[in-house]
Amino acid sequence: MGLDKNQNAGPYSNNGYRKDTNISHLDFMEGEIVEFVGQSEKTKHKRGIPNGSMGVILDKACMKNKQIKTSRSQLYVDFGKYGTRIVRKELLRFTDDHEDQLKEATDTQGSTQGFQNYVNEMNRKEKNRLRDELLFVDDEGGSVSLDKVKEFNKQVNTIHKQMNDKVEKLNSLKQDKINKTLDNRDNRNKYRKWRKEFLDQKYLDLKTKVHELQSSQEYKQKRDLRKKLTDEIQVIETQYTPINEPITKTEFIKNCDSDNSDKDPEKLYHYQKDKDITKLKYLKNELHKVQLYMKESSSEVKKYDNYMNSSSREYIPEVSNRIDYLSYLHYYYEGGDTYKYEGPKPSRIYKVDSNVSLQPDKDIKLFQWGLNPQDVH
Image (cartoon, rainbow, N blue to C red; front, side, top):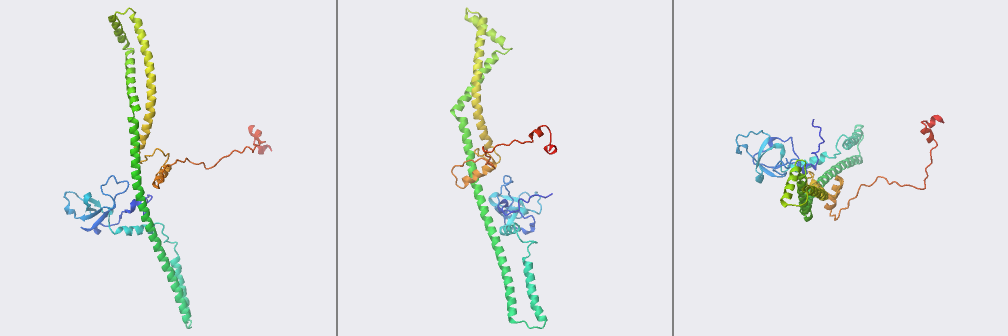
């Protein structure tokens, strides 16, 4: 329905690059220099033309593909190293439009001019009252003295001076707003550039930590040991499954016969089976220890991976919430050395006074019996 929050109308919106939807395509002539203002923070990955790029209006007859059909609101612009593009008219502005748009933005933001401004109306009524008094004396047939005329001119000049001082004050305030807006915009740009470099370095630090964890000698040894234990456990368990155990027993007795052993092969088989079962328990216990180590290391690696894959580029594991994250950035942006995390402070401090004794309520027994003290008394 168009009932949005008007988030793109302020002087800080899109770094001052504001679109003019009421501009006409007839205002753009061939050969004129224009400025591109169509890229926002949400669509910067979809366009190849940054804001502020200068271009020259070209004739559509110069297009290579003659079969492309364009509306009259679309213009053919040469942006130099960014190539020639077909751009809509509201995404372009002339080079001298920035100052006019900035003045318009400061006029609409926090302006005191409106229905409640009665100063000009009061000044006009005061001038009319003074003039009527002077004319009334003249209509009565009396002569207007020179002192009366001088007093009238003095009062009128005072009113005009007040009006001019007010206009100068408003213009000065407007210029102060413009200067403050430009300064704030420069500061925001500097902070954004610093934040990008700072977070890029944090990303590289996280990547280095993950690489150190996964490439450490202990981690590699544990990983190889886990594979070795898993293979040995699988071999032993496979030998003594209900399906494979008869085959294992037959091969073991056959090997005993070939060795010409004096002992009973049946007893030797059960002895070997018990020995393998004991070894299996030992291997599983060792595997459990290795898995605990790998789980702890993997959880730390997983935590760093989650920070590295953050869509909001929050590559700082030392903070706990969004407010602390912003405080962390501004602390280092202002030249801080070591950031100290401060947890949320309690709104109240509760103290127990040992000198205060609890007085038992006399009516507690009535409540226990389901009676209301007001009804009983």
